[in-house]
Image (cartoon, rainbow, N blue to C red; front, side, top):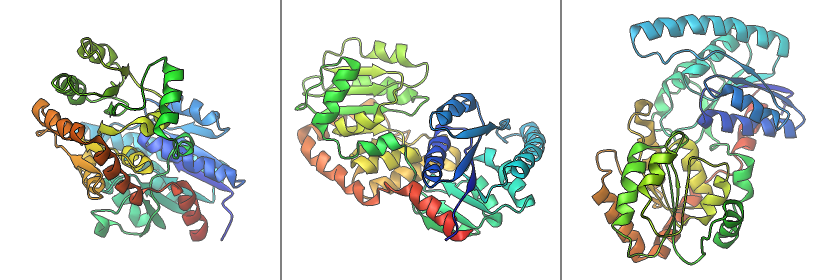
Amino acid sequence: MKKLNKLIIACGGTGGHFYPGLSIAIEVKKRGGTPLLLLSGKHSEEQKLKALEYNIESEIIPAPPVPTGLLEKIDYSKTCAVNIVKILMILNSFKPDAILLMGSYTSVAAGLASTAAKVPMFIHDGNALVGKANIFLSRFAIKMALSFPAVNAKKIMCDYEMTGMPLREEILETKGFSKEQAISNINSIFSTNFNTTSPLLLIFGGSQGALKINDLIPPALEMLKDKDFQVIHLAGNDKIKETKARYANFKKNKLILESTDKMNLLYPAADLVISRSGGSTIAELSIFGKYAILAPYPYASDNHQRENAEYYASTGAGTVVTDTEFTITKIQSLLASFFENPQHFVEEGKKSAKIASPHAAKKVVDMIEISI
């Protein structure tokens, strides 16, 4: 096995690509190697600062527009051409042993540049449905790492293996936390008064939030106010004011936040999760073995969140509620079933542990080192 001295990781434009890429970069650094992140998108400056907390350097690449209509496709091609030149210069100066693409349309320029420069290319995909960009780039790649079994695996044009989704170190550090430990920490940090005996619901829709979740969950909970439970609800960016207003008359223990970097505490504290079904969320749920009511984002590319949700539910640890099914009545009904026997759902959630991949970052780096 060849030692991986230098690795470039192209992280795409979202946290779902950045944080797994950062986890892999940290693993490379632990082994004495030097990683370099290529960042793209509106959060790239913030991500650059986050990477520097781990002494990991990064370069920001202009984000091309989403290639939807004809004009966008023309602009996308122009930006890609400029980015290919810039990335070629980075490859020439950094001289990596390999490049790893974390997916999304923003990674195409990095894939084409590495192919032109004859730098060994690897790909990681974070969903049960491999994305179009990764399918296209797989013809040039040595190997692809999969987070979940791919429903469209026949379209992949290179070797592939299951590694799982690399997760943030702080998530993995609290994997063994009890509900009591987690709630004690939450109460200390947020000055809340959660108890360890009442069921706790964790509700979130991703960093941007989810209007349907924010709008419909509070009235569904109000219909169940005679039940004993507690709530933590993450509203998402710029949605905190409206969401707090919907909980104005909610008299139970609650914590309503825009977002938090303490998900590593919220998961072990929760008895039931209601959320979207992005790849990282599915991986995190399985790490903590939580039962989840999953509401896939209907406008995700190729509806990939639906495939993620179906895969998680196939373990017996989740229920999938499509966008059209997601109503106050439906949610109230599902929650009423939960409140009849919360411990049953807690035990069912543990079934997802069989798909957990706590060592995914290590597996990805191993895969690259074996292959170069």
